Length: 235
Length: 268
Image (cartoon, each protein chain N blue to C red):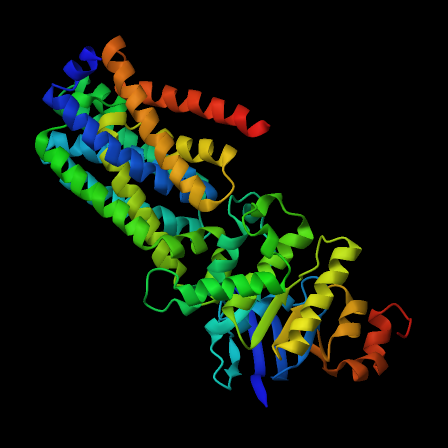
């Protein structure tokens, strides 16, 4: 059953089209990887899905009780966050903000949810450490735990392994796949790393100012587009 | 000790003590968010706008706080908007607004009372400038700032740490940014009488920076920053009484020394 459906999406910045003709749907449990070169409109699409940027044309339909504010989002890290004095627990807990409703402070149940997600990401032992002193891989796991606090259905990850060493990226990919399979949480991930994308994802969306490809990862591997993009090698 | 007791037997010193502690607390709490959001310069810009507003109020014989608070709040909201749309770059806009406000303030003062003690008390602050009505209003406003900050603490943390995540998960970030700007504006105006327009921004920035040298969580930074701020205020106030130095400047120097010490402690 589709939890997300995009029809004829177009986005513009100051009257200039940056992305058009995007049509795809996502079922519960799907793992969609959005690939494409720099400036191909990947980040714009993410902003659109999160409701941070309104599409110029077309529609984004969320169903199965999913609200735009219940998408777990892992943004690209900014410089501000890297030197921000906050404990791991404080950062993860802030993911529960969208469950706060009209109450002012976090309830016991929300604090428990934050603790559980830290355990799942294997960061419960560094709960009181400062976020800024962690390694890149640990920081990403903290942000992933925070994203999990914000959703039960859909995770949106923007370049989650950028800047990580190969071991840390491998761990990150495994964690994401695990969440996808065990919790049946759908994943949309923007990635530069096409080889890994094809390995882990169930579906691929290839953008280049417009939609170049949408289909399963297996179909993508056979396509001529993939062959060109992967540098001639079949994988 | 008896000299200390004697010092606080003056009514103006009691007023300065109460208002000073309240304003130091407000400044310290807001300072943490402002420094982390890279908004430090907004505090500085607002203090100059506050100077302009106070100068005009005194030229027209109006109640100083009643004029300055709304004007500075409006300026804060304007500065925030300017940061968001890139027509004029944020820092250039702040420099433009603050120097214009300063110029207008100086002109209106020189046209009304002449450039004298009044000007210097606005620029550099004076404990003597607080009337008892001002003091009451200041305490009420500081209490409002403190309680709003504490009530919205989880949301302010989220908006400070990661604005795009907060916005994506449905937090109305512009509301909380505006709240932050309004609270800062009120604090700047309250602190200005004592610290002076040129020095108030240090009250906001220094305690937060000192606390960040040694603390690792946001909560501990906020708490330490509050403690440091009040402590430095007391040291500066007592120092200025005994050595007859300007109060605002003494507090800034106390903050500076404190920052130096924390910086060294944080290295280890």
